[in-house]
Image (cartoon, helix red, strand yellow):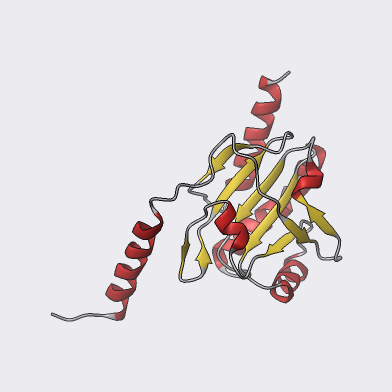
Length: 175
């Protein structure tokens, strides 16, 4: 029997997923844990200061990787629509602040990124992690500070539009 590096990594990945399967993502209706991030200008944003507005807390594996860049740029490209809708976006990964700053500058990202190298924020939201990289998961936080929708399987190319559509539907339902 031949064991390859890919088969070992595959088994380890499955094991890591199984090990965290008993801890579901933070549920709809739960209070959203605090998130603090900075934008490219160094301005600090806190989730708790966004009460009265919708907010998006999205977790992604790593700065400047193909899927993460696609997702961040989709948020950037739709940013004016999010601003018009009164929505704040927080991107969260385990990358350190210097990596976030370079990522924001390289792609002109106008929203704050949260440096979570220890994984404290990811753990608060119960986001699974494999080999130190958080799963791509998003939480839509309602104006009352509670989670109103969880996105456990994100497609980076369409997620920004999906969120805008959800926010629009939620607002229409509450009129």
